[in-house]
Amino acid sequence: MAIELIPLPLPASADPSKFQHFGREVKGIDPANISDKEFEEIQDALYKHDALLFRGVDLSPEKQYALTKAFDPTVDSYGHGNNKTGSEKKSILHPDLKTIPRVPQVQLIGNGTVYNHEGLAEAMLKHPSHTTFHKTRVSPEDEAKGITRFYRWHIDAALYDLSPPKVTTLYGIQVPDGPTQVCRYDDGTGDELPVPLGTTAFVSGRTMFDILPQELKSVAVRARVKYAPHPYVWMAPAHAMSTALGIESEGLELPLDELPPWEESKRKTLPVTWKNPVTGELHFQVHPCGAAELIIDPLPEGAKREGALYPDGAHLTDLKEVRGLLYKMQRPAIAPTFIYPHDWKPKDLVLFHNRGVLHTVVGAFTKEQVRAFHQCNLAASEDPKGPTPEDVKKYA
Ligand SMILES: [Fe+2]
Image 1 (cartoon, rainbow, N blue to C red):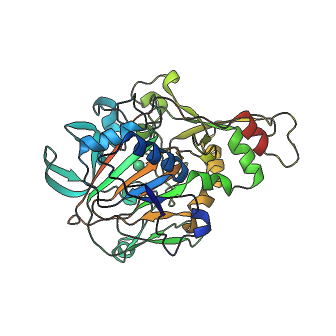
Image 2: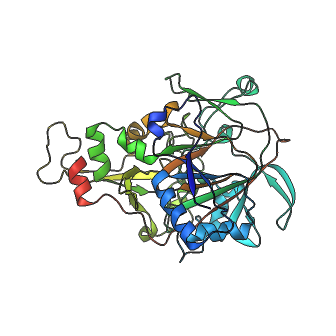
């Protein structure tokens, strides 16, 4: 059977003109049993459309790992490393991930207690909630009415030592039914987004770049972001903004000399825009919570200086300034019209281009609402490529 690619159903909140490239449901292929030719087609479709949905899939952890690995065949370590001991215990991510014993690259994530699951006798899962991460929270009264928030907009990546995974696979095994919720931005804009319970929300990094005004596109193609060492330990005492798109600058990050041992050479400095290996388009790919510094190159020779920001380049090290500039560039793209909130059904498999999208956990479950998902991504064989000199010329 030939591969069939069908646009994903969009919610009423989404502007269809902004989703011409993003997201396809794939039919005619069983992702648990794919030929080499079918894999080529899936890979091509993933980089062109950034998120692929397969419905009604039966997928063992072994098969999920194999599928994920096919995108980067020489690697075999989970995106945050396979060894979750020692320093990783202090990470803000630690409680959210339970490893499948047979296949340590696959994590069990979700909510509630799961029994006899793939070699785990009993796993207590907790859906991350904004209430433990944001500076402010939705009142318990509003929460009871179904008001909620995005948790943390991010790329799946350790952002220290390891390279950001190319692809993440997310497989829904148990998906609780429940009423829709309303995700509130609480940033004074009045923005809000109705979402299915426990949705995963995606935005396209390509759109994030495309909708920027010229002067910010110019900054984006000239900039690199330097991440904090052990960013998830560093950010653990800090609080996120109400839009979940970064950290409030209150000076609460763990001081660098109190972090687990780290080396300057293992810190990640990555381009702000990443070049899509198939389409050549630029995707704005910054994990705002981990960003510590911005390094902006001067305008290339021949570029117009008039109206340009940082024409002679800059090295921003003031956290508030770094975050302010990133927020200005990223916030437009998380407006409700640009978001695809996936409405999970049991046996859904979503593959997303982790170097082309940002995503977040959304919403809150009760303890009785059991959700079990398998997630897999692998630290990549190389760092993402930034814009070419031609790209910089074009946009600077
Ligand atoms: Fe994630």
